[in-house]
Amino acid sequence: MDANSANTSGRQSHPVPPDAWEQAEMRAALATREISSVYRLLRKHGVSQRQIAAMTGQSQSEVSEILKGRQVMAYDVLTRIADGLGVPRGYMGLAYDEATAIKVVGAADGQQAEEDESVKRRRFLAHAAQVTMGAAVFGPESGTWSSGPAKTPAPGRIGMTDVRQVEAATRALRSLDYQYGGGFCRDAVVAQLSWGQQMLESNGTEMVKNRLYVALADLHSLAGWTSFDTGLMDSARGHFANALDLAKQGDNHPLVANVLYRMGRVYLHQDAPNDALKLFQLGQIAAQESGSELAVAVLCANEAWAYAMMGNEEQATKLLGRSKDEFARADLAEAESWVKFFTETDVYAMIGTVHTVLAAKNAEHTKYAIPALTKAVESYDDDMARSKTFMLSALATNHLLEGDLDHGAKVGSKAVDCAEGIKSERVKDRMRPLQVEAERRRNNADARDLADRLNSFYAA
Image (cartoon, rainbow, N blue to C red; front, side):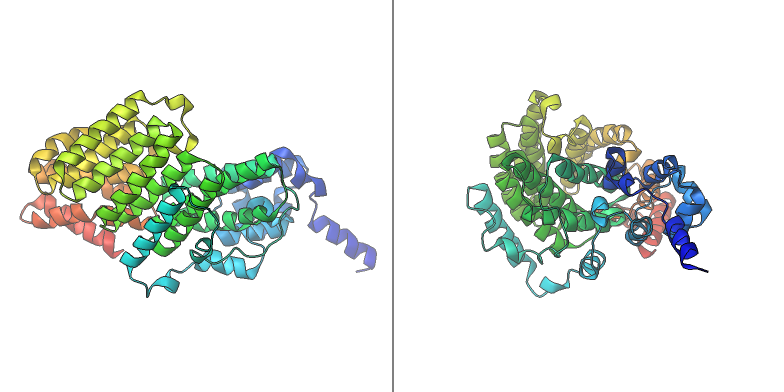
């Protein structure tokens, strides 16, 4: 083969026009990792399926399936596609170097394992109080939560387009978390964060930088939530601490409230309702400063949950009532995006959840839990598969507590059906009470079948 032939071959192996990656529609598709849209846009540029397959190392049938809408979320596949096509990795929020890739894929929790969990909770509470009550952010404490971001190239100057890319990626990844669980998308979230974090060093107007602080705070919050969902508690704590600092720097009280709410949920999950309550109460301060009734409703509902776990029935019921009142007053259309997840369905879900906790000690509460949980289950769609699984499991538990073993077993089986399609350690933990109640009723055939199925689910 002569030199001209070799050059021609080289050009044919990368037939994508250099400016293709800079067009607005393509940048939007790359930012949200909609690979099917990327491939369709390449086809418009005259790139064939065969050429896409050759560049990405995929079969033509794989390319065809992606063109038809199949999602690509595996980190290694995304990097192979980016490198094969010649996409700047940052456009897809992917790590540029081996160290970052190891951090994304490895992200172990072992580094702080020797420190007692109660000590870690107290440290976070102290930090949260300082941030919420007006202490300076980005102080010496900030760097102790997690290792610094990898030094990867970032734009020298950023504009709103760059920030909107971070926001769009966060929305897309949050939808995947709701539907499939944190284990499905956490690596992609951390990879996006590794890129986005670099922009803090870039130049930009004050308006752009403030919006970037808020966008990265929200992305850190999502990283914390997906880490929590996969059982990586130290990583969750680190991301939530960074989210608090950035939200405060961006002067966004609703987001501060939301981060405190999420970390409080981590502590509820760890059976530390006292510490959770303190975070929810700090969140309440931020929520009230923001003037958001919806944020206040979220915090009140979760305070009720904490009180229920502490056995304080009176306070739990009182705060549920306040949550409903605040929700009724809230202007949902004008609410900040970070609290819009809390809909009427979630109000029912929280009522059902709180009364389920109380029902463990007083079965009378099943009469309040069952109708609320039933309403929540009926209202959640497939986009909220994890939340629906939580509610099905709680509903089944209440039916067993009430003595309706046949129906409880049927609902419990539906909960297992849903759980099997979700990558979430939290789902497994939240279904433990159902397993306990089913085991207690092994003398009943339906309950025994459910217990056996749950045991198989946990063994898988």
